[in-house]
Image (cartoon, rainbow, N blue to C red; front, side, top):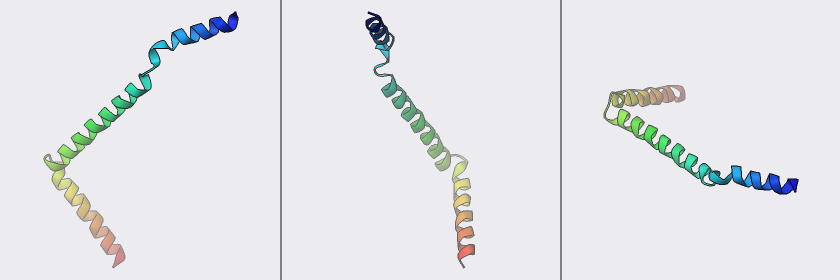
Length: 68
C-alpha cells in the first residue's frame, strides 16, 4: 500500500513538468539569438565596426610579425 501511495504522489507532483525541459531549451536558444543579434548589430552599424576592424588588423599584424 505504501508503494502505491508513493507512486501516486510522485506522479501527481511531476504531472506538470512534461514539457519543462523543452521550454527551458527554447528560452535559452531565444536568449542566445537575441545576444547574437545585438552583437552583430553593434559590430556592423554601431561603434563596433571600426573596433572589430582594428582588432582584426592587430591580430593579423601580430601573426605576421611572429612569422616573418
